[in-house]
Length: 249
Image (cartoon, rainbow, N blue to C red; front, side):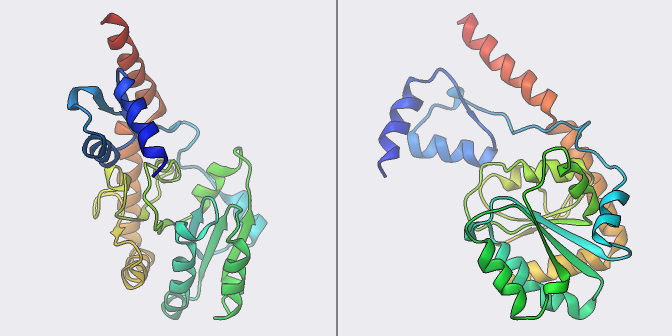
């Protein structure tokens, strides 16, 4: 509540406001009564040459991954990010397919709780906590994965994790919340699920793991989406245009 007046003053004084997603832009427009001609949507972009499909054999060897399917989830480890929902869904996933590994990448205050969760349903052997990984190795982890799971419970702008994974040709199972639907199109490049809906999350993950054709098709479409609309070059070009337009006025 105490940030709202500051935000209102800042937005009022701004010549242009750049929102990173359609949903966030609409939220700003409604909450702060911002004129439409003052608001520009420019999604976060990623380096499509750094994040692209590539061989992940080095990581497979490091972690002893052979024919297992890999579900990747990464980010700041707190409860709002929904990592616990992924772990709760894992026993049901393993009933139909024992050859599944979940990689959780990142650190945070909720990490200890997640590790405790793997002990109760006895799924320790199927969950790997990597801790923080270097920026250099991050693309390798995306390419190790078959699926990226992003079951966040909080309102997101447009988390870079999603376009980075998609640029590597991976389908993303994500929550229909905040700006995520700007990039993840349900049934086109990855499934969307309702926030907190554990049954839907289970069903979507199991469906993708069991359907190699669909998984590859969505992954191919995911890469195409990022190359065409969410590249770093495109973001820079559109941002420069905004500055040039303002300077001409």
